[in-house]
Image (cartoon, rainbow, N blue to C red; front, top):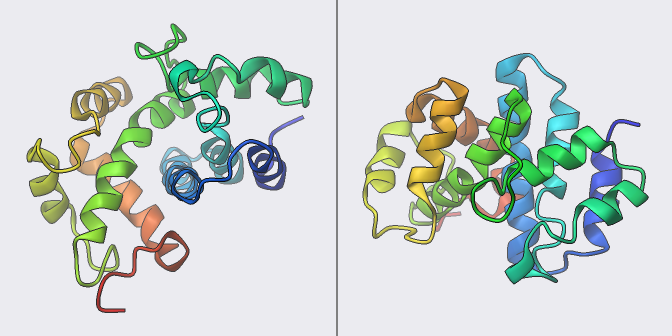
Length: 189
């Protein structure tokens, strides 16, 4: 059975309680929805994968994605969906190489949304008036949001056959629609 947004939230809620991780899951989910729309794919399904992508991270940060497959498969999540989730850790904590547009998108936007969020939080109007040009200035500054792996983002963009600016624009657009929920309305609001 295909993973739904409701089921993803329910499963994620059994493992994730920290506010910043819940917000991160939503950032990735809304970026994934936007990527799905870009590719003409099932936006609800891609959003659901985004919600669930860090399922085991809060409880097992040093063993991320090592406690994901078994419980999710047991909960009835499709093997393909579990594989997609595992693939976002490729080269970091799994050997599952992203192959489909969904997997390549998740691999790319996981880190990318962190830089977008950090950029938006620095702005008076948050993400509401964030343009790609302003984002790229922050992306190029390796000291800004230093924990976000820019090389990984660029590798993901390459896998997608897309320019970083294009992927960033899609993700910013997807996150912008949910600015209030994501706490990205800015310091002026």
